[in-house]
Image (cartoon, rainbow, N blue to C red; front, side, top):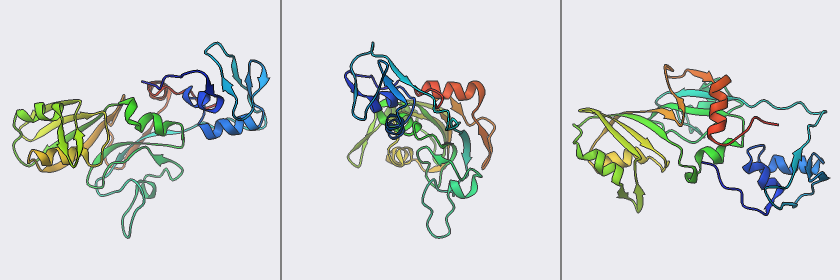
Length: 242
């Protein structure tokens, strides 16, 4: 799901919602005279009146187009996503992709799939709650799982003045369950399990939307390219960079 474009709309926001560039990059293109509205050079602050308005983004022959990178990475347990303290290691320290940033977070004690990129357009479209993108987790717990856990999690629970809800839960065995979330509240799965007196032994994120962890082992990665890359961008309403 992408955000609806409501007219009239500022030209920089229009380009961002179209998935062409970030708002900041749109402002830069406008300032350089590379955006036309109905054949006329756009100015900062101009608005697009309607869906019938013709908007063009010209190619800058002096600047090579940037090809963004998207990587599926298996975060090891014990590694933090951002801002290491003391002897801690972050994804940027060990992934081999120092120029890329992680999309979202995966807590230190958890492991599994996280996406890395240098495309700033992706952040809001992947992480904002209004888009309700699915993330799937495989969880092993110490205690035996009661059948009622599925109903409780899918109905939602109150915890620290927040409503925590799973979109879908499957009990795979006495100590194993799959949990699909469309929200990303801090330590959400651990808090939900703690509320029903289950202790996490292992928590692995296995899927983000249509991107799967697959055969990746701890610390391994793969580039999203070809149909996988195109499918990922389409799923969040983005086009290839200009």
